[in-house]
Image 1: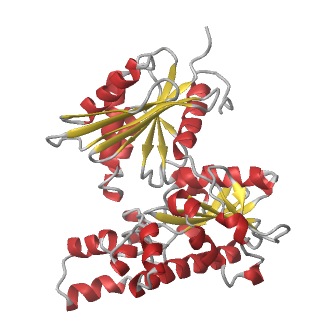
Image 2: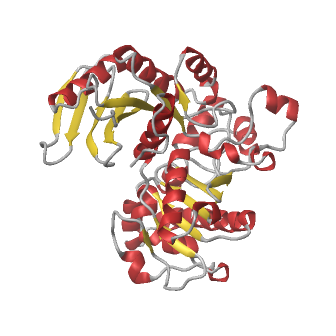
Image 3: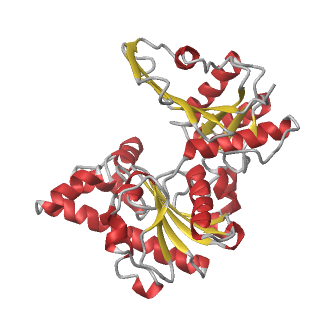
Length: 412
């Protein structure tokens, strides 16, 4: 009998559950799905099996909690002969947003690990509780399966102390775990490795700047496969301009708004996280809509785009200084992969750094990793589609295989 080689990847949000079942021998997605509006009167279950097994299935029903959501997902998988109870499932991999200073690599879940993740809830109050619900539910349904927590923060744990420590009183910072952690780590890990492959260079001898540009956005400086700096900090608010988040601001803005505008802490928190960034500047956080408005001469959209790309250039310049030598600047995620104008504007004026895009290459739309810089460019500009689910599955399978005495490096 062949060794189990399927990994179920779960991403549990506060009111949603996303899942993918991945075959690690082939790298194929056997199925994917989404349960959303959990706990509301009318929930939505969407399931997509791997073609040509069948088309997308969707239904509306009440799903009371994450336990019911995972059971609904399991039922959909079972209908395709891919159930969670199948002996071919090797492990379940869970996305966990915040690992704090404790979790610097994937962790095989046991009661102690759950307790430690629970302690980190104050660092990610919107995300870690939902992640915990998904883990607990999966353990109840398949207590015999290895459950692996893969942390968004873990890839950035290699940052040196001078990069992750804030210049605030050390006793206060240490007592309350205040430091730079970084996020989108599974994406930065996957993309930096794939970028080295695209360049035909050994990972350990490749320096890249990764720009993960979605509604949330982050930059990282990666030297030889190890993160040495990243733009997000204690929370995902710091760094680049994002869809609804401000990114870097003077911390005194908080005090100023409290004193002058009479705003409370929760109100300012909502302002900076949900009403700032692109949506705060122009009312839209969809880059396609912003570009359409720019084409029509909309001044607010032009300003939002300029602020957004100016911040990107600043981080490219800063991380060039941090790395000393840059082999590639790599764009990924929804905006990074699809918005040619953003890539062009982000490197405009950086020709002295060896950076430029070729207009023809940059305009090509593709789901494959590709170079968009001119032939022979000193520093490559690349687009590498991210695959966070595959990265979670890869790390999960490696740890589960190691636990069982199997081949640690067996992955797609």
